[in-house]
Length: 68
Image 1 (cartoon, helix red, strand yellow):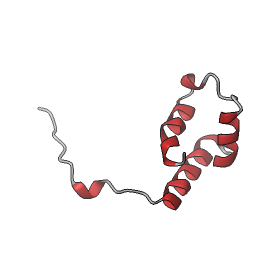
Image 2 (cartoon, rainbow, N blue to C red):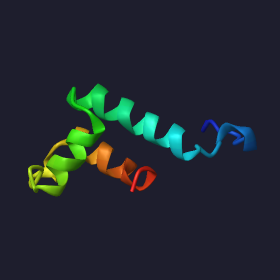
Image 3 (cartoon, rainbow, N blue to C red):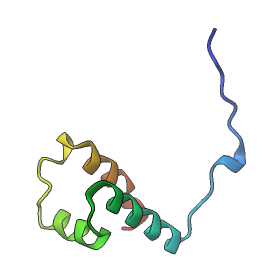
């Protein structure tokens, strides 16, 4: 028998700009042990060319719309 999860409206909340930056900073530091600023600089410089092979990078890329 399948389990059905009931979504509740209050499970999702919007982050403000400062909260989004803090969330992204924490995510980058947790995964790569560098600052978000350093990650973005390296990304812009092309240092993550094989990014699809690294799940840590892919996760961080999925969060980019929060800060850019």
